[in-house]
Amino acid sequence: MNQVLTFDELAALMQSCAGVAVDSRELENRPAATFEEFGLDSLGLLGVVAALENRHGAPIGPGAESCKTPHEFVALANNRLTTGV
Image (cartoon, rainbow, N blue to C red):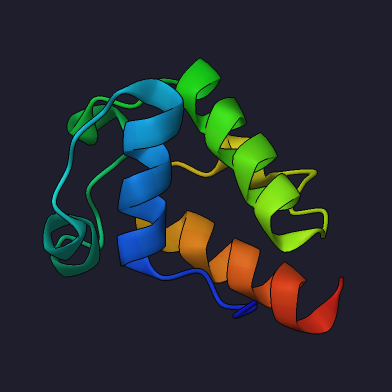
């Protein structure tokens, strides 16, 4: 499996884990927009983290659930997925 989180995958996880429908291009093209602006709360983000960890078989947290923006989350997740740190 690809070990890089894309905005498409994040949008799909937001939909499946929290019922939040968002266009992946919106996530990608609005770097300062927060998860809250897209309708995802902290509990929903925890669900995304858990699903992502299960999907990739690698830990993403701690700290991932504290990310405020999708860009921050994608950067952190990709760093952890590619370096294991």
